[in-house]
Image 1 (tube, rainbow, N blue to C red):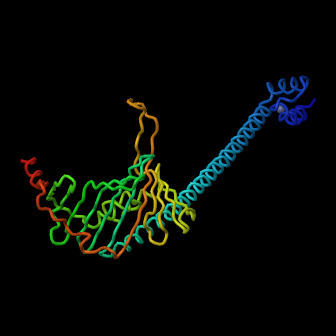
Image 2: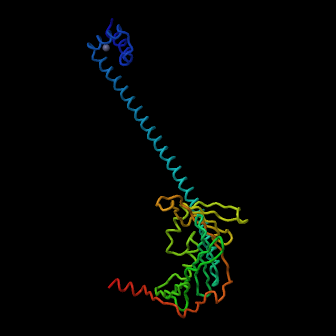
Image 3: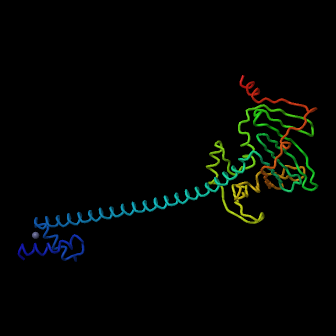
Length: 318
Ligand SMILES: [Zn+2]
């Protein structure tokens, strides 16, 4: 066979040779020729280089496509996360606005200089109800703590607190009428009327010192509405173990469940039998308080104990 013709045949077979698909006869011919022919050796190198280059390009393309796919995946995950954050933030704002509206409404009720608040708390099956009554008129207030026997209706006065926030804001009187004892407390009572309201309306305090509490409230408060039990629409605010019903029109609490708890033990043991939770009922009246409701009683013959917190702090810091 002529050399040139042999070269042509071998070069036709070279692709198959590289791919290793030749029969053994053809393979032998190619290998034998390659040993003798530099030209065909070069051609073989060229083919090998071409194939390698192609493979590299293919790999690059696949890598590029993979990168694009990962980028797209990250983008869509970020998108979902952002949408979720926006939804949660919207839900937070929605709850915040409800709580804020309630708080504002209840504040408006207390703009008056004349109100009466009554809180009746019952813990578990205890017959004794604890009753807190607050009278406020033109800067003077009286808070009376008593217990009421649910069975016979008898009332036992525990303590009455008096203060004149306008003419004597730094003096408070705790009066035990039963034992005829008075504690006269001197202290910088700053919050005054606000304190009376916040204590009775704990759902969403408005004053600045409770800002964190206020911002946190939407996170842990579940809000729904209900019609039952009192015949008009009210909010049901659930937070932890407490549930508060709030009048939609006035923003004032109507009932509170689980404000405080009491553990009942088995007789003469420390083994807890049950934990009972409290139910509190709130009543409000506006512009019904008389001057006599907030007037100090005649305290002649009472034993007076002076407690000056300012002096006590001075003593301690000496
Ligand atoms: Zn050749």
